[in-house]
Length: 370
Image (cartoon, rainbow, N blue to C red; front, side):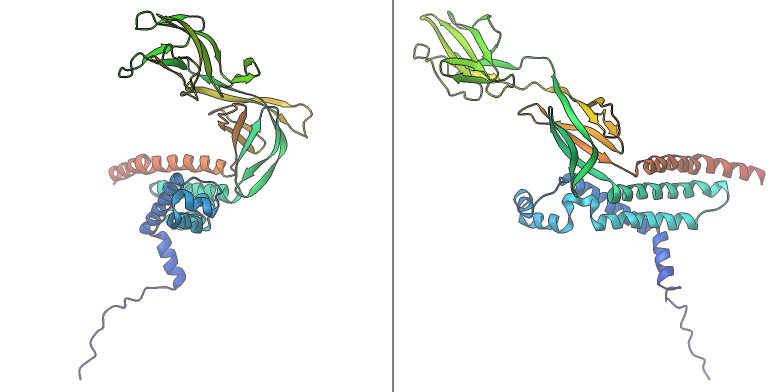
């Protein structure tokens, strides 16, 4: 009687769904896939501007198919979407399961365990920032006081007042405006610096230019011509042109190069006034914090890379209104997970040091003692 053929070992996975889930969380491949997805999402979040946007605006800016995808997946507020939070949670859970299963009470295994705990700390900090953190923007005009900020979740009260006392901009030194003079239509124009009261001889016999007035914001009321402000909203120069046949005066406007108020005595000579904004060297805001719990106002200076911390909020100098140069824009951040971030990266350094320096040293000493 023949015995039945041996069917071989069973290929059915051992354990139930919970055991299989734990094995998946402990898998290096699973952790690498999650980290790759988080990295890809972060790249997308860098490319797509993170701000509230209407569906029509998304379709106009990115095209209809991509705009619909952005609105569907929430890519304009990616770091607060449910699926990104899920990815971070899975990474933290994987690190926790993997780290707890590899903890051993000896120096050889303490390094990897610390690294896993550091990843857990960093992921937890990111989750706290997304769920509990606040990231908003506020615009403040000189003399104005604000008590709240605009965020993706709506208007959030600060609990104190912030008044902008003064906003200032510093520019790099250099010539910001000049004249272009075409002596002949076929030649390259000559560049003439604008200097009040200085007579500049042109490279053409008998021709000279003298700038008599320079107005950053040209305005005319009746017969009176004046500058309405110190802001370069309508830059203009009034100059005297000397030619072999006599002298004439004219106004030139940077924003209106085709405007011509001179006669035909110098029609062969073409001039254009060019005003250029100097490169911004630095800009800063002098503010006063008006705290209801403190009778004494607090004055402070906010610069780029020099923020102001008030309570749980940190104010960063973000930008300004270039048209008025009197409105400052602050980014306001509250990050409750910041201490965990510092702790996580500190533990990461310690764990890597144990893994790559202490562990090999312990192994070498153990080999010598054998």
